[in-house]
Length: 457
Image (cartoon, rainbow, N blue to C red; front, side, top):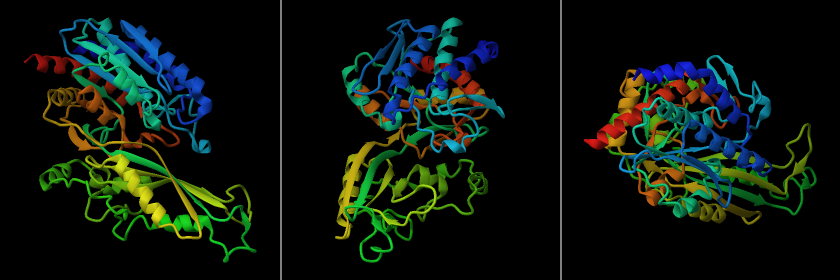
């Protein structure tokens, strides 16, 4: 398939120019002021798909941000691949830590630097360019549909209803997603599992106003102190979550599968050095890879209260808040976990404060089997490009809508991600190696070819 490399070589700069146009759009779904940018990004995707060769592409409304749908049906009797991606991105704070402007993409050190460079504009854009290549070279072997949404970073809140409404239109043989990572650039891998998510916000309220910490300190409970103590109690000395019932539905991974997972290349010293930490942390009895792949967790994502501006202001705050996420493993229900958290957190509150728990978005975990035609096609495609058979592994991340796809659309998902640990997704200085970007464009058409060939057998 020399035509693939030839097409990439001849169009490298154009691919980047077009991707940069998308990266310049600050499509931050969690900030209401960016609503116009969400529309702009959706329209950009529509034009991208049409130019790439889609028979039709349209921006379809939801109760929130729109979904871009496109398709090319070359023969209804052939298999259909449904490509999913998202055009929304995370906020960029703290902006002062960025080495370049987050929405002014740059190439440095062989990488694309911008918010969304990896997650998920860069990775999703690989599919548009691979599709374009197959269309223009006459090598598209099957039907293709695209579904690019704008709310993944806020839990795909309105996508489920849209899926139900458009089930017939979205019918496919497999769903292909590039929104995950590989173990390392020279250790190709395919994600076979994702953790679920339950996300909540908590508020602890004490006195009816901020108080002078000298005149009232020691006599009135400080909500910030209380919140810190309550959060600390959510883990025991073995770093297990203390919420009653939290582990009830967790399925233990059998020793054979744990032994297979242990074969994945992983250097703990390299891992710690890359994060500039002296020791790792986690639930006793599990390795680092197991802690982020097969075990549930609870983490504070943000905490605030009182005066946090420049200089000093001696107050006893009226309120203290925190945002907390719980990463879940398959078989844990995110609704149930959110309810267990709320019940426990409210019950543990001392009488001298009031506690409010507000559940936000969530989603189920997902396991993608390795004995399917789709997985074998993905494995062969990756091996062709990287020269090594990929390692199957379970990711610690979450894409809440993936389990919903299978429930509503009835199709399995292949998580063909090309990101790397150092890409700093969700953080300042997000980046995406050019090599991974081009390798993705090279691997995707191979997946199409092998999938269709194997389906015919």
